[in-house]
Length: 438
Image (cartoon, rainbow, N blue to C red):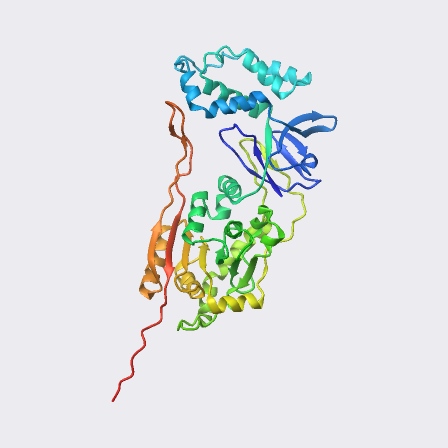
């Protein structure tokens, strides 16, 4: 399973999900292409749309020396500053009179069999203002026309960054509006590292479980917990294309199996489970009913015209039930960290039941897009004296274009990334009363 993305050099990249089966099709603009040419090609391969005898096909291509040189020029800020010739675009006006080619001329070139690159070169040659633009504006013009008439796609290796960005841009509600920087903070605040045993309560489709497994790299375990017999969907894990070794480290376990009275801890967990199950039963059923219709929906790109057909067999769901040996080991020593992403659940009671499963001094991180729910959870943990170093953080992300005399924030960006409650679990045993000596 791989991912398709527009070729390097474009300012706005739109990753999209791809499962390269022989009967799957890729839609670019208004053209559908078979994915047969992608099978067997390495990640990083570049493809372009060409007209074949049976319609549009994806043909592998290699970056030309001119494209590589142009990309290097765009990155070389000193070159732009020294060779800019002090030109600017203040005298240029967008009044639709600079282009000599009409839409009828372009359609005629297409009927004659002209390639997309030939159409782009003709548009540049017939533009009366192209030579008057700055070097940066000329490259932006080429990129814009190439997107329309000569689109290229890049085969990328799936990772948590690209998967999170794809879902956040198209279907943010299916991952609880979990932005990439918030996902990174969750992993950092929970101290997820090699040989860790991470307890995850994932109600964001499996994105959190996959990101933790990617960070572990085949060491340690990530346990996705759920209530009763209804498992939380983690189908997004399949998109990471993990090896069998990494998949063996992803397990699922019911909280009924994990609940116990910890040694040296007077908190009884099992008897309180039915209360929280009753509160969260409707929410869990709702989440499963929504995702069961299309648990791993196709990521479509409406703006750039990339989408995938949904006629494909579903792959086997990642994750297996935790063995009794693993469960017993976690009962003895506890988990090394906890991450919770359950946007639609009451976090205060949930976290109070999950914290006893951690070892002492284990960090935890809880994500929510609502500040009030985290504030109430923080108050309950403080009142119960179950954690210390409690703090609520709000991730803030702003992308900048950095160029000589053109440094400014991007015009369009996300303004909100949710909130994260972090802390360290401590022993909550009540102090023992000393017996009176007569």
